[in-house]
Image (cartoon, rainbow, N blue to C red; front, side, top):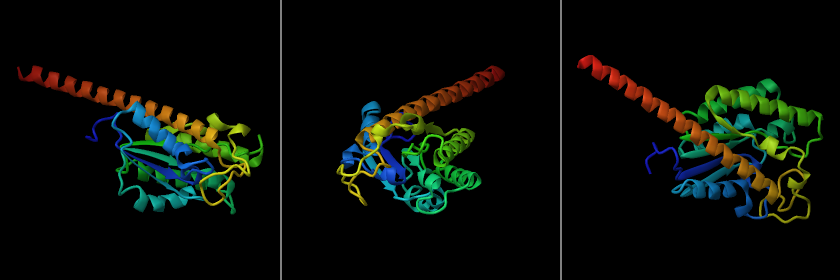
Length: 239
């Protein structure tokens, strides 16, 4: 398929942290990325012929810049979804990122992945992960999502607002004892999502893909119209 076709995405790559890996969906097919790819294939025939993911448990945004050099850029997918920030919010066993650190890392990663990396990029903001409403971690997640939104807007990147879709939804949290095919726990943990949570993320991202496709189509149409206008003006001058 020609890469100029705005509504066909033969190669899809999901790049992110443990949520992209699939924790803690019941099976591979229940992970949000797999549900998304099925939706993309149905909505845009000819898409999702080749799918892959690079999901690193504990992955942070700053480290993702280096991973992108080997795991994303050589693939140059037609559709790239990016999901980082949760481990920056929590610290993942270490110190949470500051606002400035997160902004710098996010800007660097966006600049890398919106160049030659992919034809269409959709960026996921941070999902709610059982943070106490109004607590320090909750507020940090809100602040980091504002950073993602502002940096994405500057670069024309479409954001999938998974925070709004998941905030304070206890029913989306996987529970200890609920089996999962994903390491390291192979069961829920009251932090990562169950199948319903993954489905909600997939639906939000699929809607964002539609928004991005529509925006690209309008931009392409405007470009063609401008080019035709220039051609018409040139023709009149040469008459």
